[in-house]
View: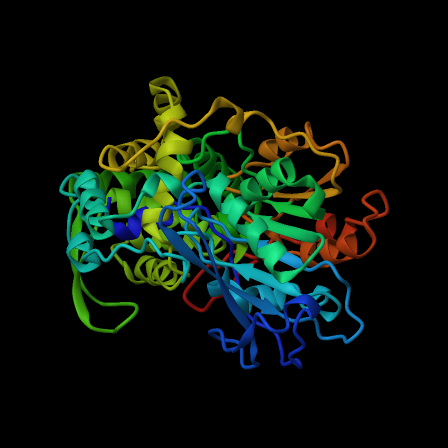
Length: 486
């Protein structure tokens, strides 16, 4: 499995942009921030830094610098409690999602600041970004890829860093330090995917600091993140059923499940080495189309309705030896925001994969959808990564009475609605909404952003009208190269 394939395994928040506004600093932080520009946002916003201990148990030990940005409220008569964004991954940097967050929460920003803090190990907060040779990896077969070796190559770039300190608990300690530094008495939270786990930890460890929370695509602390085969296969089965129930899709792709298996078997027996234009630079490069890479790209395609609608066509064209649609889908994966692999492994290896039993990994691998077994791939990388035992109480179900809106997509290939129900059991003041045609982190592709803004404004969970989620129509399938679908 290549670096590109690894990136497709990770949890993430999907995204894009908003409009101009006048800069107005948070009152208590006016002298602590300076004007700055973030990618794909034309207006000037506010940025700052704060030094915190790398290890909170060593007062005189090394420190790291946290990077954060504030998208200031547009109204002069703003609310005192901002929205803090908890990015996904683990391994996304919140400031690098600024344009999308700006668009998604444009209504909420009218009266509230939006605070983006790069989690330690991401963005400009002591980043753990690995420089690896993607081009070499893309030309290898699944069997030739040495994941443990890739992890060692990554680890060698962080000499002198205590990577066992880059974990979820310290991340929330950091965020709380930033809240105090900026002078906010309370904050509202939005956490998507892994960010939902961060939000649950915030609710547990600093309940007095949180006014309300919106948690999207739930990954409760008690579940193990990394083995995604079972959920990916379930989501793919729903795609197959939806295509079969659609007259137009079924006519265009009458044997989709069989076609998929034929492609999988064919690529397992004979991977295809192609010369293609790099989707980022347009330079020619070698690309090996393997069974593992094929299924990995399709699994990521299930994350969002717009890419999900392409998958039957991609499967059919790949079966006909036309790899252009598959390569295009791979290119869109590469264009997503960067994952900081060192942070991903620092979190997952110690917090999740150490709890993964052989039985769980075997059960996750028992599906006919994913050729590259996601859990086993992470286990291989974790063999090379520094790890630490984590206390059992870290993984006990979170109990909280803070008003919390939970969001799930019925089609989600990594964080199923059942995980949202699981989280809700400990949240006495919560409501769980499920979008029938939503996938991963529905805030970005349904009306859930408006529901979240309404909830944060009035905290009335019972009155929240979710009919817009229930009435949303499925995205039409793409049936041919002209993009026509029904």
